[in-house]
Image 1 (cartoon, rainbow, N blue to C red):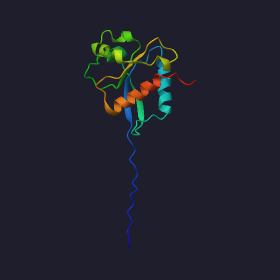
Image 2 (cartoon, helix red, strand yellow):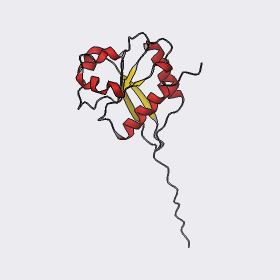
Image 3 (cartoon, rainbow, N blue to C red):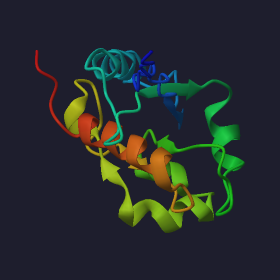
Image 4 (cartoon, rainbow, N blue to C red):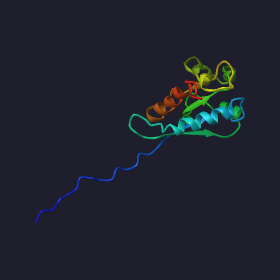
Length: 143
């Protein structure tokens, strides 16, 4: 009697990497950003490892949430400002402003510069996922 062992195992579903994003839901370009998030999610974004990427916008008072950011905060993977002026009272964000990407190209109704900051303490899969979203936002939407 021969027993066959099947080496086929169902692959576990890879868990999604959620990019926790702080943005002003009431900004001039808020609804356009909503559309861009839907466009990004609709493109089935994945990390190099194959894990899906999900964008989550934190809700709450934008200015209050900005004020809670420190150089050690790791509760947000991406901060999308209304303008560079938003960092004036926030030293931890001001330090990162020179490294911010301008995501205005991806939005129709935006000012000249919309900085997107991935805090330096964000690493690994979360950083890769946040960077993929920022790269997407830097490209003009395909009508």
